[in-house]
Image (cartoon, rainbow, N blue to C red):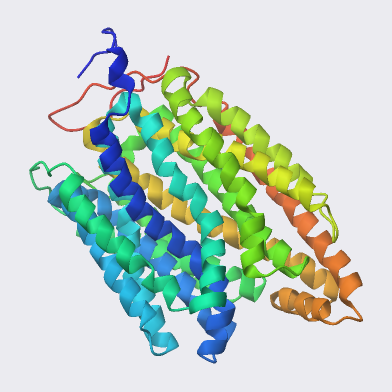
Length: 510
């Protein structure tokens, strides 16, 4: 490894063909997993009619997938070390492929939910395993550019998912939102087998079974409780607070135990690294704020402006274009000037764009909204993956798998919490406007908007509720600035490997 005192050759910083081949395989797998989290949301109404069931039940298609993700992610770090990332990555794609094929062939709502869980078990392993493979292949000094490559599907998924899902549901069949993964998955498995580097044999560590029994059910219980908040309009319902408390108790018990035992399921000693800890705090606030606002943007276009699911997806496209422009540039800059100097301007751009949406009305110019979305995309490209890069840059190769696992747990949990927080704010505001219980706010707004006699007044009231909700998300995004101020302002030094223990290095900040 090149030391900090030795200059690297100029071409050592470039992403060579070997790295790009690995990146192509990882991006293909990531696209499947991320598209499937967004593409299904567009089809929920069609599936409700298809299976003649309630919205409460149909929600489990999304919730079951998310719970499976949360359950399997903690095991991924250990499994990467024990079985090798290539084997695990191919196994994850296989699980996802089988789950997709079965979900497309589902004969009732119960079978569809079960097959979505199977999909989630594969999807949960894809992202952390892929991130580990890429980071190890590129080395710490190129991790910014590599994360920029991996970030493309993470940012385009929420944009492309609704467009693809809307088109498939409207023009083909809801079954094809699952079947479409089959050819992609087969290609991904073949490419992984051919192109991914061979697994290096590692000494087997004892699996932390007790830790898994605490952390996986704990995360699942917490996310289940939080995901029930929007429907019940608060935390007073038993199936909100009970699983929430059980989840928190199990997670706290895991943390207390993990600090005392050798080789815990998630290596909490990583948080002794100041840069990693700051990046994780920034990531948590960012995911809560950002995923929340992403959830309600398409809802505004569909509910208030009367657009179809496909049209709403297309209206979000400027965001993806903005992200595509800044993400590769941000990846290079993080490696050269440090994450802090890239993330802070990115968050400022997002704040500016969300500020526009705090003034949204029933007839706000689409040109203004799409311009704000483009600026938001520019900010996303400068924020999301650079934060992840900052977390991984100062770690040794031996700790990257565990760090990727910890990071994905934070992302999933914070994303679920953010979605619930913003959903409950919007539901409460809509309920206040239409004088109904919180859980009925969106239904009452929909009914009033569909009635020609009340449409205009309902559109103004609904738009006002969205504007107030965006004000809350603006506050949450602004809070991200505080930890982001402490991100490194200079490029990270390459860490020294600790071959004996693979412990995280001392903090390497200038």
